[in-house]
Image (cartoon, rainbow, N blue to C red; front, side):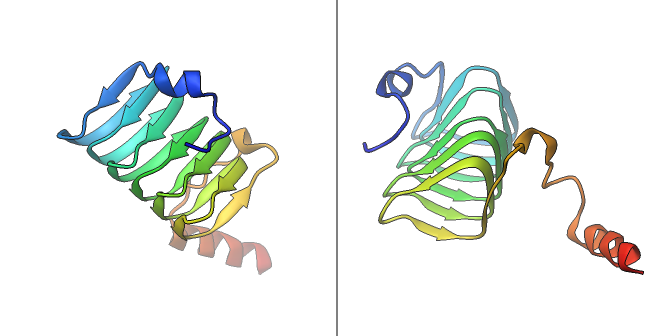
Length: 139
């Protein structure tokens, strides 16, 4: 695996969702998690999140450092680094301080690198409310 993340971090994951597991709901954790199976819902990660090659995730993700090697449908907001490995398939937008996409990644969405990502919440306003708010400021 060709990642900037420390290999010791990847080998010492605190929690794992196994290959044969399917979960849905709101997931929040403080330390580190590896997803190998299927997850649908929202993820709030205070620690390191690794979505492995075998994972299929449909989620809105807020986190710190995120490494993706599997499939993700959903948006990511990270206060640290987001890295997509060669096998990653991501359909959604990414906002993070540091973003790295390796050769071979399938990515459909927008990337935005943030200077102070802790002050931005991309999920705060629905799109229609955001449009109305912007029109009112013009007006």
